[in-house]
Length: 122
Picture: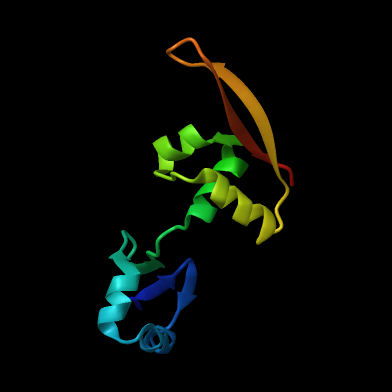
């Protein structure tokens, strides 16, 4: 019978390392909350952390993947209601070069409305 392999976040670990990781999580129950464990097709246990992604991470990933983001898109796609606050934090706390471009559009009442379109310069 072949030895069972364990991968944690893409890195192969042994039983002792897994036991240490479980202990550092605060025990088996906390480990189950924090880590998803699956047995894949080639008899390898695959474990990965299932933490929540922050609004900062969602916005940053979107800017890097798609190039730009508006508050309407942020609300519609991610449920973020205060995109300008997230952008402020990314600019000032993470020191990222995020560009704000003022745009205008005609709304359904035939009025001009203004909004910001954000992009990142890396």
